[in-house]
Image 1: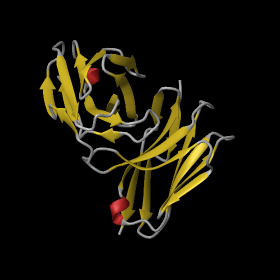
Image 2: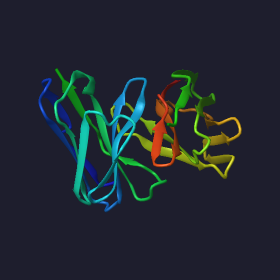
Image 3: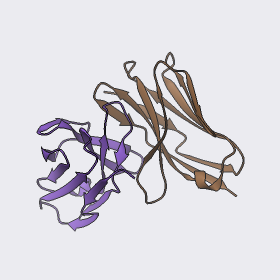
Image 4: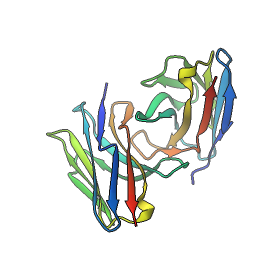
Length: 112
Length: 110
């Protein structure tokens, strides 16, 4: 498996609280992504990064922000969590923009 | 933006039979079509991909076909085995975005 880890793996929080998920890679891949997975919706792209400090929005970016201050770390922040953000979040990395995605193990977030 | 429809949402086959999963996409600019397999509780993993200049690609028991005119592509699994049981996702890439289908849960009955 590619060297990619997510933390925390599980989190339960309350509506209105801030949450940060961390993705760490040891592969030195340029591209990093955050997806959310919900039943019937497949995987939907939240944000992605194509380099340090270079990020862009995906298809479901509202309510989320990201930061990438180092090649190896990509943070996803929910400024004020809502119940609709209860989901499994996957980080992914790729070496090329049109290439294989390597996924992390996922972070299950429950917002009460 | 791109829209990817995947059918069926669930598929049950007997061990040894073939399974076919179909996807359609909306953006004619899409040029990369990967398939991912996700076993229960695990992360998605790439099993095969195809690019727009190729009509068919095979890798042992799995194959993918692409019809750019009709904007659809399919995954074919032959001689299915219990370990093929998983959720399969198709995806299409146009520009900067890789858009996934909703997934197909494949169950292979021994």
